[in-house]
Amino acid sequence: MMKKILSLTLALIIVMLTACSSNSVSDNAQKQQSSGQNENNSAVSHNNSGSDGSTITKEGANAVEKARIRLTFNNQEIVMNMYDNPTSRDLLKRLPLTMKFEDYSGAEKIGHLPKALTTHGSPSGSDPSVGDVAFYAPWRNLALYYNDVGYYDGIIQLGHTNPSEMKKLENIKGDFNVRIEQVD
View 1 (cartoon, helix red, strand yellow):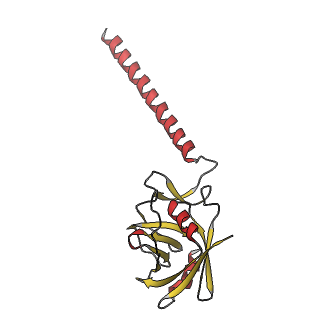
View 2 (cartoon, one colour; view 1 turned 60 degrees about the vertical axis):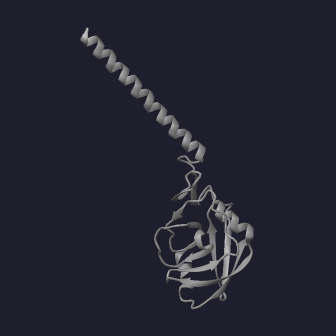
View 3 (cartoon, rainbow, N blue to C red; view 1 turned 180 degrees about the vertical axis):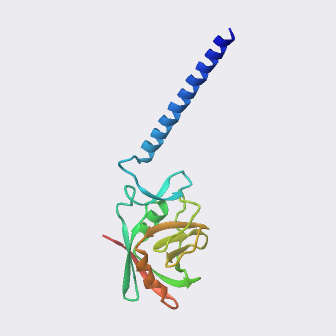
């Protein structure tokens, strides 16, 4: 009798574990399908999650229609690929614009926007890379990174270019104007 109870209990545990395992596989497949990512269509992500749970991507299938911007300053230019997030799309709607930039802490050039960009659906902070353009929400700044700064709350990455391009900014002294426009 004891063997029979033990066998039934063991069989019940195996059935329950099998059911849980197949549900989590199904849940994972649904999550991949709803995010639009699978083995054949993976987007390159910068591990930034939006407040709505979305992933802010740098390039790949979720690019903002391959949107690019051109920064023109001191007879030089930098072209940047934009990321797909609500803040980037908000900036693109406001272009073209000309802004005054200045150096900040030997790592970035910052310019103050007349009106804040949307932060809805964007990450609460990030660790920008050399070559990134970002929005720093607390100060309403656009920031162009030519050196590493680390993670900060309030930074929302908007786009990226080859890091060597950003070195054009490093030796500029004082304030300077930057024309920002979308590239066709």
